[in-house]
Amino acid sequence: MEKKLVIIPTYNEIENISKIIAAVFALEGAYHVLVIDDGSPVGTAAAVKALQQEYSERLFLIERSGKLGLGTAYVAGFRWALDHAYVYIFEMDADFSLNPADLPRLLEACRDGGADMSVGSRYCDGINVVNWPMGRILMSYCASIYVRTVLGFKIYDSTAGFVCYSRKVLETIDLDAVRMKGYGFQIELKYTAHKLGFRLAEVPVIFVNRKEGTSKMSGSIFGEAFWGVLALRFRKLRPAK
Image 1 (tube, rainbow, N blue to C red):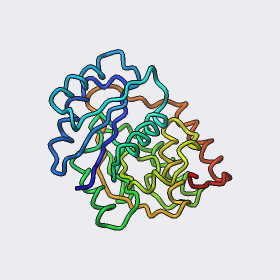
Image 2: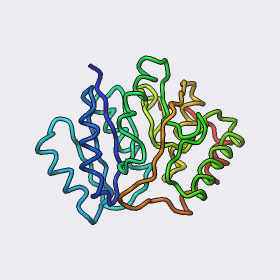
Image 3: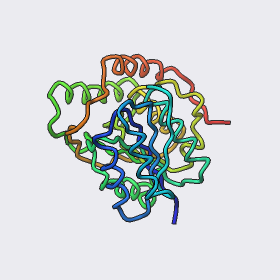
Image 4: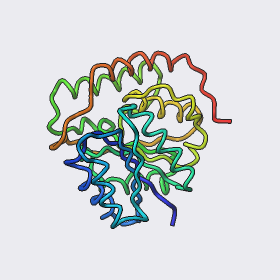
């Protein structure tokens, strides 16, 4: 059976982390989990370490010294996954805004559906968002329109953080060249994979606003994404050497 790893970056997710790990491990298919914690002051890493006593062969942890950015967390996770021979690597948040039960659907799109990378999409089949403030919905939806307009990129949910990568995508992308650290990272990785010739597929999912913990979204994150997309438009993207 091919090895599968779900990467979950965390900062102050003590309310959710044990439950999200349990939900992933309840799925069929022997998914592994790598938590990357950016120095949470409220015990998130300690909760993972406690669970490692029960799931020593499936649960892994990288602790970092502070908030270094979502993008750098995922790049660290990607490198770890490649070093440990994983075939399918997933991005997923800890807050249950997206349902872990949809992980097999993302896997199927890659393993059986011919995609190299699959995206859990809030917008490819209408707007599937629950309990989000209207302002946030409009900002997110308009951001995806902006990306499609500037980059000519036909992904409806380019900022989505629920993704399955086949190993060859992450082996080919030059991870050293990734520039965006916030949610613009999601756009950069999808667009880079597209420009390198990989096939992307969108899988419709329902996004539900978090019930516990606090959002990490900020205006600076959107600013980075806005200007970063313009820069992407003129960058020459090359595969890793």
